Length: 105
Image 1: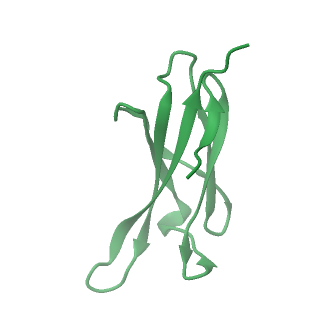
Image 2: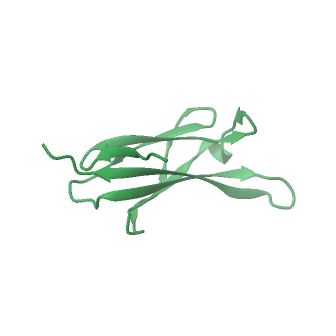
């Protein structure tokens, strides 16, 4: 598997698509949130709200600093969905990974 790579110190866009079967669906309240974990497991971002693009599709721009650690970052998108009785509303998670690199001139 190949990871998407981004240069440290830049901003990149992350996108999620929530589906049920083959149909795009929105989470409760049309709100999707994300947490971003650094390679050491600490948080870069926590509980930020993504922007709705269309039904089930959300994005967020993540900014990195020149001193953020290099390595693999986990992006955990989540939204609340009604799974019916007896579960009612539960979080649905979708995770992405990226690799943050240092590019030498």
